[in-house]
Amino acid sequence: MGDNFTPVPWEAIERQSNRNNKTWWEINKGSLQIAIIADISGQPSKANAQFIVKACNAHDELYEALDKLIKRLYHNAQQFHELPELMQNELINEGRQALAKADGFIKPLAV
Image 1 (cartoon, rainbow, N blue to C red):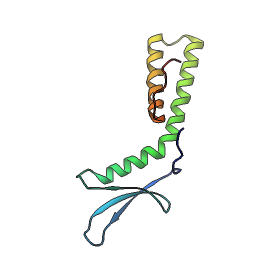
Image 2: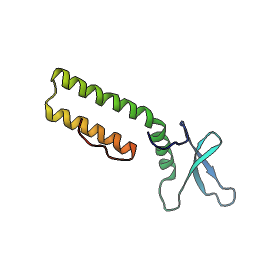
Image 3: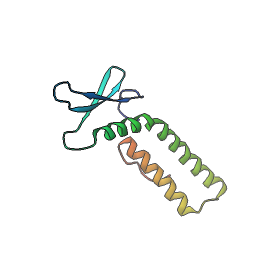
Image 4: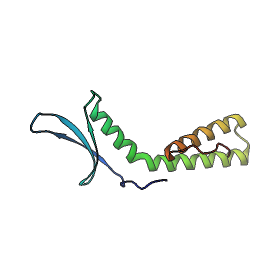
């Protein structure tokens, strides 16, 4: 699935400065610091850090589940002709576009 990255699970850890009581969030894998999320522009650093961690930790499982679902849907639609062609193509294409976005590029939509 592209470039190597630090394996999940990651965690968001709140940190606070002893000097000025400023708070920031670190995204870590054990003792390895992956990123720092700080309130430098009034953005909600806690929510952003937690969202990044949840998304990254769930990415591989969601990707694989969607990939299997698309393949099964396409196979069943071809085999049993139960889905109208338009609905079949829309569902498959939406799923394939989501997978392509997760891969970082857009794949052709032909099935």
